[in-house]
Each structure stands twice: as C-alpha cells, then as structure tokens.
Length: 188
Image (tube, rainbow, N blue to C red; front, side, top):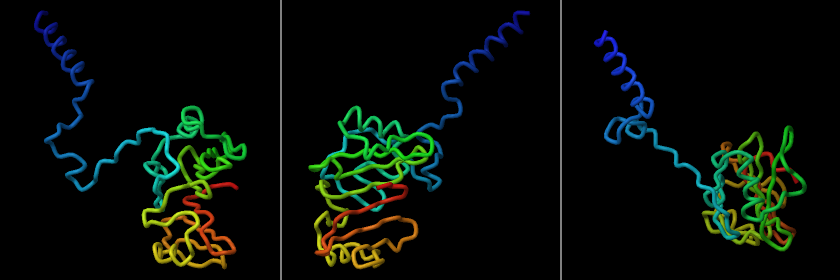
C-alpha cells in the first residue's frame, strides 16, 4: 500500500513540476531559431511620435498585422491622447481608426480591420520620413528616386509595384508628396 502511495505522490510531484514547463526547451537545446525560423519579437506598447520613420509595412515599431488587436488602438486614444478618426470606432463590420499630430490632428492615422493593424495613413502633420528619406512635401522626382517600386497610376497617384505591399503615394498639383497610404482598409 505504501508503495502505491509513494508512486502516486511521485507521479503527482512530477506532473506538478512539469505543468510549469516540461515541454519548454532550454536555451541550449535545438529551438526554432536553430531550425532557420527567427523568433518574432513581441510588440511593446508605446505612444508614437510625429517624427517616426515609416516603411512600406510599419510606422516606428507599429508594424502591420503585428501590434495587437483593436485594444491597441483604443489604448492610443486613452493613454496617448490620440482621437478616433472620422468616428471610425470599430465594431462588427467597421474599422477602428485613430489619429494624431498636425494642426488637424490627422497627420498619422492607424487603421485596425479584422482585429489587427491593417493600414497607416500619413499626411500633413507627419514630421518623419520613409526609411529612404522622403517625407510629406518631397518632390515627385525625389520620391521616385528613393522608391523606384512606385509606378504611375495617374498624374498625381503612384502605387507600389511590389504585390506584397499595398502602398499609394498621392501628390498635389505642384507634384509634392501629399500623403502615403500603407496597407489596406483605410477609409477616408
């Protein structure tokens, strides 16, 4: 009887200690990064600045599809003082759009669709540049030299030829950059 009791206690102790990580791998074991799959860094919430750099997939550390749910957009409003853009407050069938910076507070707009960051819209009030050094007000020739993937749709609209990137650059009548729309589901 004692043997069964001890065996049961040993199994219980082993199960309890494994609950915290028997399947976890140690730092020196073969993990995903050694198999060629790099670890994905976790997004850490912060209040972005007006002068952060943009790429065709991010604004500062806010990367498309990688910064959390609609809750992140709501936190930008409650913690950072951003506002809901044109009453796009999310919910079933609607996008969540939040904005900040510039005279109108709309220099940078983030859009959440399907519970992930899906678009970044940049216009007057954004003080940064792309990773290639062009910002709002840059001349068409400078933008095209820095971003040769853009092709002409009309006299004032250019789009990325990279099918994996949804980017639209809009220019004013003076052919200066007016806005960049990065990603999908931004609703004016």
